[in-house]
Image (cartoon, rainbow, N blue to C red; front, side, top):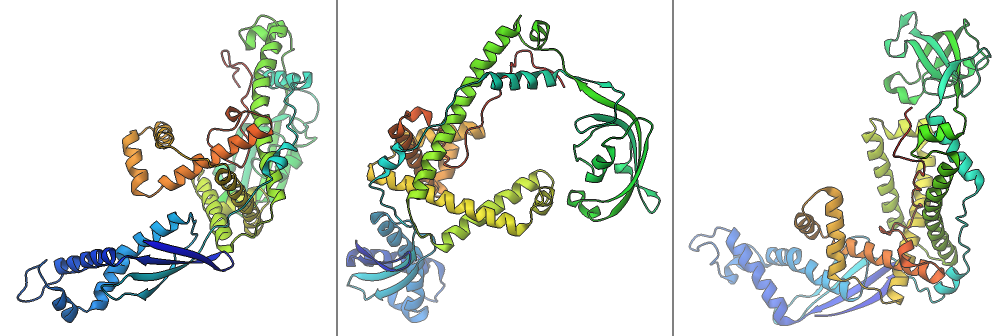
Length: 456
C-alpha cells in the first residue's frame, strides 16, 4: 500500500492512499461473503450467493458501503501511522478509483495536531534557574506551630470574640417564624470567620461577648441548593467566647507529640523531613519552569477543535468531581465567587497551556529518537493494575480493546522527554515525576511526626 500526504489548509492534510489490486480484490471479496451470509435469496443458501446475484438483487453500492465501513478505516489507520499523523477529528473520505482489477485509490482529508520543531530546546532549558530547596529556621518554626495547633485546647476567655476565636452559641434560624431544623443548633461550638453558615454570622460574631443576643437576616448562598436565595432570620445567643491555647514549645511538648525527648531532637527530625518535602516540591516547580520557558519560547497556532475538546474535557472532569462531593458545578463555582463564564475561560487557558506542553514534549521525543519498548508498556500496565487493584492481564486486555495502547505509549514518551529536560537542565531523570504530568507540582509531604500523631 502506498500513500502520500500534503497540506491543504490550516492544520489540515490530504492523505492519498493507493491499495494494490490484489489487496483491494481480497477485501472486496470479504465484503461480498459477509453480505452473502446476511441476505436471503430464493434458490441460494446463505453464504453461497454468487457475486453477480448480489449485485443484481442487493446492488453493488451496498457491497461498496460494506467494504468502505470495514476496510477503508484499516487502510486509513495504516497510512496515518506511516506518516506519523495525529488526527483530531474523523476524516472526510473520497473514493477516487474503485474499478475491480485495478488499484483502489481514495483520499482522506483530516485535521491533525501541529508538529513542532525545537532545535534550540537545550539552550532554552539551560537558562532556567532552579528553585532553592533550602530549609530555613522559619520553615521549621511554622511546622512546629502546626504541630502545636494539633495539640491545642480551647478555653473560655473574657475578651470579645475575634476572628479565629470560638463561640459556644445557640443558633436559631427561621423563615416567617417557621424554624429551619437543619440550621438551628444548640450548644454549637463555632469558629469565628469560618464562613460555614452565612457570612453575616461571622460579621455579627466579631466583637460579640458572652450573654449577647444577635439578630439579623441573611440570604442563603448557592451551596444550600433548593433554599439558595431564601432570606432567613437568625437569632444567636452567645454563651461563651473561647480561644485556642497552644502548648509551650518545650521538651515536655516534644515528648507528648513525638518519639523524641527534646525539642532539639524534634526540630532536627522536622528539618530533615521538611528538606525531603521541599526538595520534591522544588523538583516539581523546576519541571514547571522548564516547560513554561519552552511554552513562552514557541509560537504555535492551535486548532480550535483541539482546544475546544480539551476545554470540554476539563469542564466534564470538574463536573464529575463536584458530583462526587454531592454538589453541582454551579454550587462549587458559587462558593468560590466564580461564574461559568470565568470558569470556562480559565479552563480554556489551562487547556491551551497543557496542549502546548504536550506538543513540546512530543517534539523533543521525536528529535531525540525516544522510543517505548514492550517491556515499558507492560510495566506501565502492571502499575496501573496495581493502582486499580485489578489483574494486569485483565487491564492489558481492556487497554488493547479500547485502543488506549497508543495513548499509554504517548504518556511514557512524554515522561521520557520530561526526564530529558530535567537531566539536560542540570537534574537527573529520577528527579522528574513518574507519571509525566506536565501540569502542577508534586504535593509536598507533611514532615510532622506520624508515630505519635496528635489528635484534634
